[in-house]
Image (cartoon, rainbow, N blue to C red):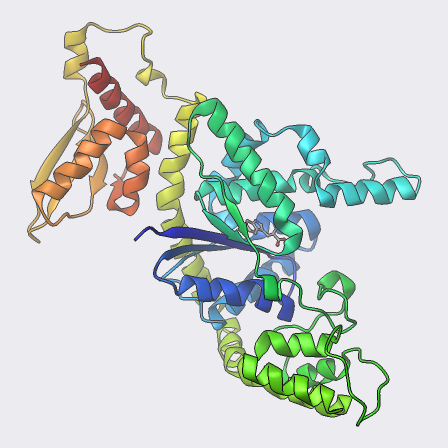
Length: 436
Ligand code: TRP
């Protein structure tokens, strides 16, 4: 079975609302339960720096969003759940991608263009109050996605352009340096992509028309009561088209329940009764989650630990991959210089790194990669048979760094060794193979 890698992030700039839940949190939790999917979910706190200048708000939002995801059923052991700023490779990759991205492409990004248009309309300098962070936003997002070679990225419709840009970046990089990146595809949940807010426009913090996901019951009831309706009296048939109340209900209800409310609209249900039904339906789904959320919010240390464990898991991929990319662009260990100052072949043979296979007391078959001085660089997990261990070694010999990345968590960098040393060693082996 081939596994599809899903990845998505939420910017830690505020408190999650129903629109975030329906459009992003819920579908991501559902996708994570599929056995043919490998999920990467993260808190985009570097992105938050672009919009939010209050440090306490970023910290609070990071906690709230993490707790919301967990309360909604995300199992951190099943997925890779992490905080963007715990993965330093992401900022390094941002620079690599910056260097293959046309400035003109970024000029056309919607968010940047909107800022320029506002300035132009106001008669200001085109770039007034525009930070380079806002301008670079799509590149940081590209790095998030390409760092883990995600196949599918579920996002809101407003993010489609960013995905196109990420594909461009991947293609430009691959074109220059060889194929390293998968071209990611956007996934849009058509039915729920835009949940309306209480005024009927798209639910958004910036319109101040949102309903916080875990608002206390009384507040939830009050906010639903405030959803804009028309002036039709009880008894008069109501239209479901354009009814924000109906759409919000539909996002939570089964087809059967939706059908019933549709019928009630036709039969002239009063707005107050309709709102009561919508409140009850939402509250039924939200109450158990709200209880979990409140418990999680009381224990920030537990969430911190989960995120750090998630970052360690993510870095088992990002560290070797970044080492591969550094090598690809020419940021290399000078000792691994090929062709320059070449020593005589006899000397080269003695200094070649090698693999050592052995069996542990648990009966499993392990190997390590050691450098010419006998220092351990890489350590494998236990394999069931010597054949399996041998196959992994064979791939490392043949494919070098690419095989290292694919073997992923089966290999760990030994204490005291660095990923650059591992890359250098694998490159030397591959070079020696090619030469012999
Ligand atoms: N820009 C996204 C948003 O505002 C959040 C985000 C950051 C993201 N990096 C990402 C989404 C990578 C998907 C993949 O919604």
